Image (cartoon, rainbow, N blue to C red; front, side, top):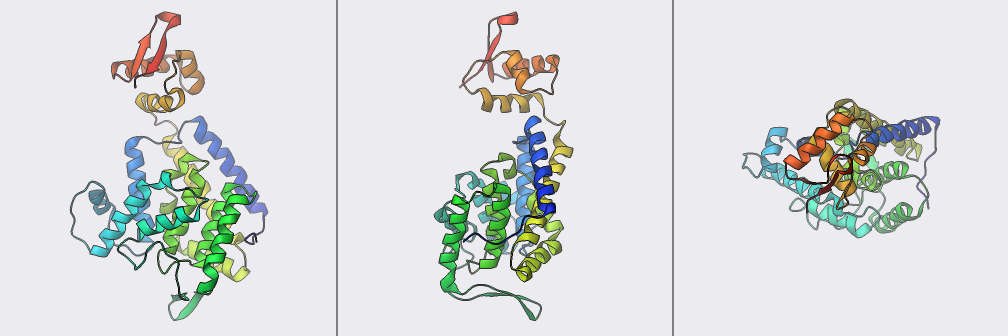
Length: 319
């Protein structure tokens, strides 16, 4: 069965806006930010990712762990950070369509934090807020068939990935397949789903925006529960995605350096030789003079080999 939701005018508006912004990201070659920015975004993501769940470590402390330095902090918090770093370092290895891959990610994320990480729960659970039961998850005997159905939806349904990622995220919070770590896995796997088609999502600060709007995040989950479908949550998460892309475009649209472009060009041309004109056709927003400087930098840094002269000049990346 397909998880229930409705397509609203707001959802269509957000999908259109997100699609336009993804086009801009591609035209500016922002799908893979600079190395130092990737590290900074990863640390911010892990900080927000765990702070939502009550982790007390600061960005500076997480940076220290990231750099293999020792810190003084609660053992559980340090373990959570190390596990999150491990799972994000392996994020490109996960297959969003495969249930076993999902379980593997949970086993890394919750290692030494719970008994039998990577295993589905075998008892009933509920979410308590204050003195009230906020959500009663489905009985444990329904978890496995519900998860099988959810992964069949990921594999076979014709929904676009933007919708699928939001639906999956909501359904994980509703099914609550694990004793602990469900919120983390819902948010992590939405990123895994999206980056399968749009690599930029590996580095977008979605977790930071969710943390900044944590009350709205939980409200949208509760309201979707009450409505019996994920429509409200889909609208909320698409809004988060739109804002994260807008933030990326505002910060980075003019921030690529010559070496950044050379690195991106290496992914494009690989071992093929190319001319300055071909380089310009790939980077439509730079001038001829800038392209020449980029290529000279590549040669000077020992990244490129220059062959020929004047109009016959070709460039090729070293092995």
